[in-house]
Image (cartoon, rainbow, N blue to C red; front, side):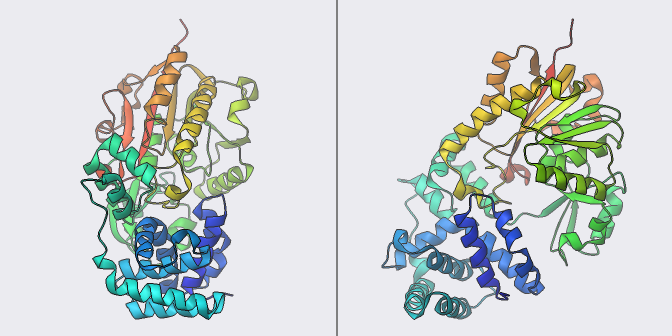
Length: 460
């Protein structure tokens, strides 16, 4: 079994590069090898994987400057070996340059032979001595390319964000995306209060902080052991969930005894939160097109001590009220999206998304929102959410929906049905004049989310 963290990182990155699914699946494939590493080596392995993906374009800029072979002609294994070594040289102060180079050269000899090892050795030694002398693209004449290289953002997205947000906001957004985020969880209030859980977590992690907006969130850094090995995790006292995602469920504001539909439940982070807010009283139907995700959701529900969730594997676009026994008081549709709002946690996303994906997914979101709307009872609430800050997946989806569905409107009057207990004054600051909830990493130190709370008209 492989015991070198750099070698494992290489295999994870190569598997991710060839596969069509996200990084977490690649990490899952090599989870056994990673688990056998010492704590320090495990941390190094993860730092290399996430670091290379966060800084890939910046690293490639240096490779282009010092390699006589064009980037396009370097085979993938060699390219990722270069990226891993250069990430250590450029971004990791604790690893001596000679150690970063020698270790990668030794691995290359075993994997690809002396000739390739010689090429890598030459590029790395030249780059190590001179990479600070390589100028960035001129910011005045080519701002998108400057952002692309300095902050390692795909050029198409750099251009798009500068048009949408301006240069300064895009720079700040990229800086926050490239920073390692704190770990955030949601207290399982069915079993423990937030302050009590924070006290327990202080024994196994550092920098414990209560979240500002989400009423049950806790953030921390530097866990002394893997999260799943926490005794508090085994007891079901929390779920890992970013603060922005927690706010979405608070915007839904479910109540005990209601009938709730989580229309794109996935692994069930928001489903569990809904059940907590309902005090484990009522009915939640969690649906998804992927059966395996629903199986994981059921297992997670048991860990949390929740028993009001029923799962139903369905394709929402082919679903009607006939598939259920009733209309729902509230429906949450956390729609499939580009995920461009959560790149600080999923840095691989920016290299597997394209401009076409935004239009493709926006078209699907409009159809799914309409399908979900048909399941809301008259007078009921529908919350549409995506982890993306792209207007095509945000406002444009809602306005297109409202043009067709005159039986729905944006709900801004949160106090009218006693939902204000969950939609706190702090959360209301995140809601725009138009009634949309929007969060940004560089402003709120949380993932980028968009949500709209819609109300279906009561029958006259």
